[in-house]
Length: 266
Image 1 (cartoon, rainbow, N blue to C red):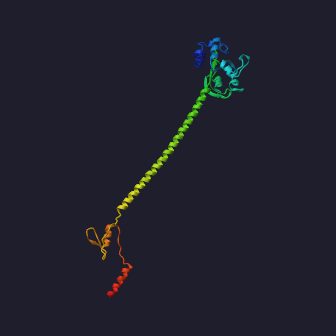
Image 2: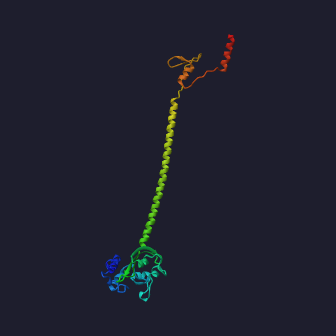
Image 3: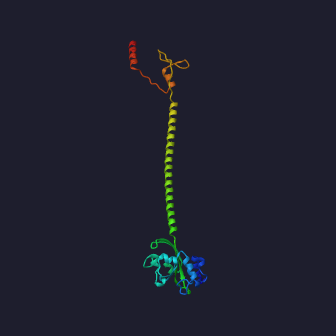
């Protein structure tokens, strides 16, 4: 593919069907600008800002949108440096992809916010070549994408806020869930302790034997009559019907009586 064909294909990428099949119909021999009133009218009807630059950063042609938005003077009255009108500076900005296009001969597409124009812009820089394949400048196509970028930023704000709300809600649910888990564990522990206490009480009650009701006891020998009608010693009866155990001793009164009896025996 020749140089002319490459130039025509690159232009078609940006302008589509408005580019003539023969690039010589689109540019004058010196590459200063479009030829033909029809082509000029079509060019001026494009709402994107389109400027044609030479290798020295001079704007040698601009469509109506670029002229009105940039406030360009009549180009035949003097040189208009692109960096003055696009960036409000007295020299090309550092790292400008459009300027790099003049060095590399490769097309560049990028988005940026331009403070001088106070807008977000999409810039497409297309290198221009002469009939001998020499790089003579570039075509600069600028589209105002401020509304789109502001919409995207607003969507980002809403998305970030929504993500924050979801995060906060998730954290709150996690805290509530942890609190419920603790309460459930505490209740389960309390229930286990209650069951253990009940079991201990049941076991203790099963070992308790009580004596109740009327006990027939001999007024003289103090024996107790059991349910079978037998008279039994108090110790035997109580031991059988309770967990009590007996040890034997002599009270002072009985001790005194026993002493008197022993004295009489002597």
